Length: 349
Image (cartoon, rainbow, N blue to C red; front, side, top):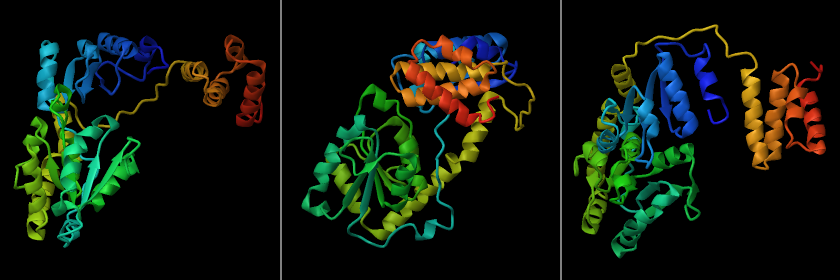
């Protein structure tokens, strides 16, 4: 979308009247133009919002808005009272199979493995937990962090985070009380439960909807509540009960199947596979590859720019036309582009 003509994309035969298009993690002027053009065409536009951003103008062109927490849905209703808004939580990305659950809980009472995962901007929320883990009572517990923060033990990636959860006994999810934090979804909490961790979390609305404190996890509002929860989970039987009840709750309500059914219900979708022989307008893909290339070249990322420029040339009969139109290309870049094009199209078509 950032490198396309929004109106032309909306006019293409690949998207028909009556279709539903979901906008997720995209915003800005081009996205707004695309949404407006789709709505004018008779396409249902769904804006999926996962965080409380200062700007949510795309919702003005939406037929319906979905939010991943009730708090966020309430905040969005204040901004866009004329738009229908529904809350659908995030589904889990990975879930222990039922046969894995009996052996998931380790029998150790000391040296428990604690995991934390989050973005660099949330790093300071760990300060209170770190201080507690320095107490003599809890020094045997091992905290491992996965994040894009430079001090994290593990560099964040989806697979690394899921792998860490599978091998940890406890997931800690401390929080701030900012408006943005209050609007967060329960995704980290439910993912920890799904993979067999006892979850100790701060007090957020979405977390309270999932955690029944002391039964399937813990909501910790004070330092003493964090300490008491850490003491409780040392006992193997109690830890096993917490894990089993947490996993059961998540499997029933946050698995892919129940969340998919909720999407279908809210958006009025029926299970079907859309099959179409219609293609995008002639030259469209070449045009978008060229725009992609121009963006990279403007960032002085010449290798990526030339790679996309080569793709554009190979998709267009008159590839030389793109070269002559790009004044940013030096003679050296033009020669390199020619060599790269020849490698992709050895028959010089």
